Length: 104
Image (cartoon, rainbow, N blue to C red; front, side):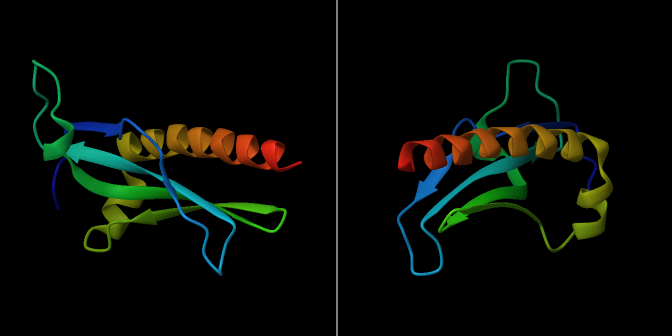
């Protein structure tokens, strides 16, 4: 099991084209680093430990959290990861709310 020293959300929410299974989909990655660097964090070197996914189908919105399979239990219980997941869920909820309000 790895010890993550730095956890943060990716800089932007990704959006996806419409698909037969959903009308709208967006996601944001939770990134982790084994070392906390003083000069800042290079996002490209982060490991994706969780993905927060927002989906709209018809008028129903749903948020899902997907964890790295290899260390699922460790990531699901890591307080730093959970703090980032909670923040990411807020971002995704705002994105879904904006999408739904623009549809009406």
